[in-house]
Image 1 (cartoon, rainbow over the protein chains, first blue to last red):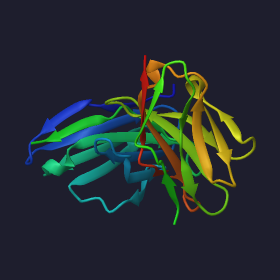
Image 2: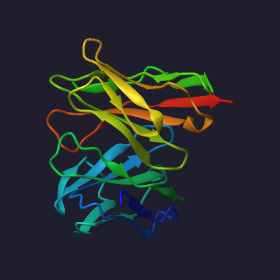
Image 3: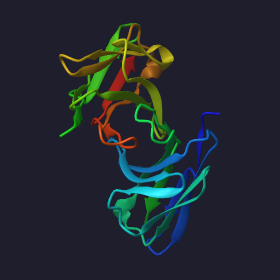
Image 4: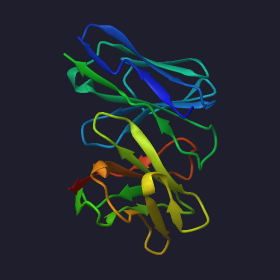
Length: 114
Length: 114
């Protein structure tokens, strides 16, 4: 199984809402990632978890709150977002601490903030 | 500074013809290089990578890439393009000081016409 599953596929939320994005993988990967991608642009790294601990936070605003409940799951909690946060949010996973490893990406959640 | 450049925003090719998508990199030391493809409203799919060894790397869906150290290039190639290859292609390099980060190029849209 080389799949990273993200739910939901689409999400529309108001600026006062609280919502969560979910990501799951069963490849035994211990590194998991959140990326943000705007249209026709490359993905931008947001967070990296290594062995369920937050390893990298790329200065992401606190309205985005990641959580890694266990080695297979990754959540991204959203609160008080702005319209400019509308984007495709991608989850990825990889082997941990192996520089030559590739990342496997989910299909993404298309988020629209209204 | 480490970086990746994809000099062409778009590449147009006729079905059945060979295709090349260009990528050049700037990184000190031995580069770890990756190619990903993204279809509309989907996540990134890993195509191939160069870590070490043979300069010609074969990947998924008939794609291959040639690593050229003297020209600091890692061009993606396919002998015979398919209409279904039309997508957005990203080249990426892993920084020397990270097992997690990927520095992406700006992306190249490949359009294969029937």
